[in-house]
Image (cartoon, rainbow, N blue to C red):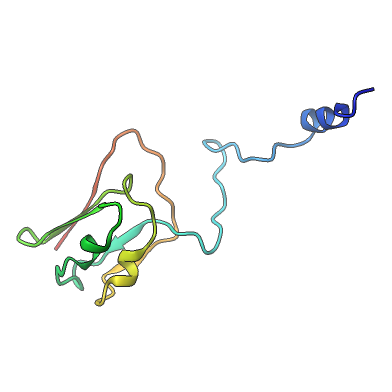
Length: 109
């Protein structure tokens, strides 16, 4: 009898090791980084977040008083959160859900 027969039976009869994602939502693990949110009432348009973003996911329009954040370019390092002196950028616990359109999130004053 082969040595891997027990492994085959365990895989066939046991429950899966992964989550069936679209049907079951995975639980949030504490300490993981999620989306970011901008509080435009605190933001002074200093552009530090745009300069420090390694992936170029943040675009600050000073004249239009708006910030565009591209979650599909973001690597979720949260350098922008740590660099904001006015605490206008807050990290959220949720993770960006999968999408079919590559849309930027726009925050306006």
